[in-house]
Length: 244
Image 1 (cartoon, one colour):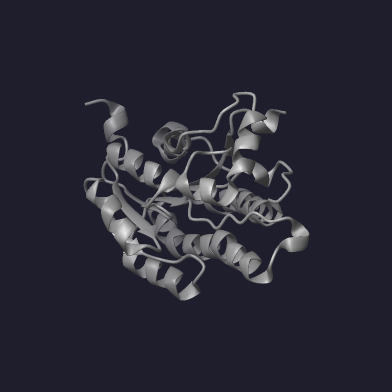
Image 2 (tube, rainbow, N blue to C red):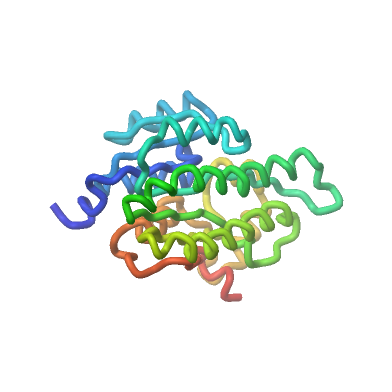
């Protein structure tokens, strides 16, 4: 058995938004590397289907936009060694048409939910003096894209949190990094962004959308001991999008 299949043995990983797309791909790879995986999401049926395909995993229903649900998730999860903050709301609207309810849901999910889930789970990591947190952000956190102001601002906030948390938690052996995907081929993104996603991918140097597993491979690397001296960084898995 190769090191890549056992490097996370004995560790517990929690993946938010893990029932589909990038989150599901992350859960599969983490489990394949030996981790005991907790999958979270709002849809219980999708969660149950997901864990049926991931050996040794379990599902906890959670809505990151709901503070009480976040607190319950912290309680139910127990000790977590690897936290993948992937769950997100990703609305597309030009600024003058952005409604308040969607704006608030996006920040409640992407920023507040991520913040307080991390705050709830990291004390155990700090006490054990080990842990890895990977925040899944977006190319639009650092690249201006029309119609992505709300989503981009929320993900820019998470990249700022990545740096702050790296500074706070690093002295206790806990690493914090981000992966910033470019256009990725998932059902959720296609439903929300459609033609815009296709236009973005055509403008990339690689000229295509990513497969969710390509993003998950970047997440796995940062979560693993292979990235043991990397913290406070953002890995741009965007097909060259931030290079042009």
